[in-house]
Length: 256
Length: 256
DNA sequence: TTCACCGTTTCGCATTGCCGAACGAAGAAT
DNA sequence: ATTCTTCGTTCGGCAATGCGAAACGGTGAA
Image 1 (tube, rainbow over the protein chains, first blue to last red):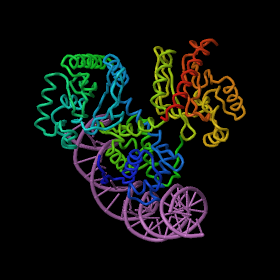
Image 2 (image 1 turned 120 degrees about the vertical axis):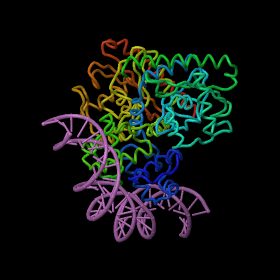
Image 3 (image 1 turned 45 degrees about the vertical axis):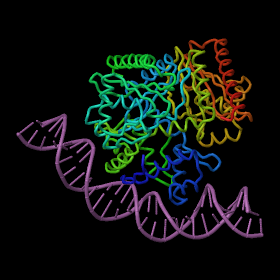
């Protein structure tokens, strides 16, 4: 999330920064980009032209944008996730049955990445998008995942990224996280109110392999005023637990 | 599609080749990758470690894979396409109504890229995946697109990529392409049998803006034995034309 | 007409990323 | 048990590479 430069091949760092900035600016010209990245115009120009060759960026009227060339790699990475097709289907079912937004998140590099996202009939719009990286302690699915990860793995995640705050409700201390995770394990699902975003209510469950190791987490998010009573939350949790269980059983019996 | 190296920043070329190869091999170790790319082990190692920092690759037990870091950029590029959300919805509707596979394709760099793909109840499985780049003359949607592109644009595409063959039915000469495109314009949709893949029948229609310029094309594919009579093909074509028209009208009235 | 800013090109210099060699570890073959 | 191979990793020297600065033509605003 920050600017790293201590990697062996600095051109890759520059390129990654360039893509990130180009996406952030939602398109930019050579000069604007050079200014933003604090490099010379010719450098930015050369990079852009090289990236263009591979479809990583596209040029439209002197403005460059992130291109579709990366979509192929991204989709490949997504489909590589265990149980992807099945999970996609189940997330769709949850979205249909609850009418809310359902997402599936996996961990990579100690961060959460949403790889599936399906909207129900009256689903809320959130700022998250497929591929977005989030801190695991910021989202409900992330906590559902953490709750079932081995202790040392959780410690690794905290070492790498800490427990950054987001809203006043975000858990930022190790002790309260431990307590929260314990509560999730007891309840068998994670539940959040306002933690990720004000007025948003979310419920998350892990998806685990035979050996108990979680491979991801599925969550439903909706407006707090719609999921405001115990019973509705419990209903949704049951749907999630059921679908997660179906995924787990299918994964157990097929090697996919 | 081939190995280019005459770009200003060669590290980007190397990196792109690396990602492509890593994806092709479906994961590889340092040595294997170095051998494949014909570079030294240390070079491959340095690149992998740098790419790992940005989540572009991930390491699992001494094997590296393309990572989810690229998914974010890919999704961004996808959503940037005009009318994306609407098109996604309409493609879903076509898949539901026909029961077949429906896809949406856009052009980038003179190649086609499938950016939406939805399966109906009894849809065929094809080798294409979201993000895959295809030659426009290889797929039905590509020809539907070409048929409505300005002449000079079509000429550009042919200049860049030629008209590579794929099966014995693939159109590879400029004259027959011209005739085909003319036929598509008259018929108002493109239709293919066995051209992309044996036993596959496909129908494609363009999606055009006010000014007539196509922004993409939508296609339905199914087994030839199911779409074997005139009437069924015509039915599907009508669904496609209707949905495409709905997209066009909505795009006209909203600036999205 | 002037000025400012754009994308593009060229060029010389210092950085950078390359290769080859060597290391310890792990597994297979003997 | 031990040799041999192959793995990932580390290091250092050298040449290629990618960098910034400056200049060019074009375009639009002042």
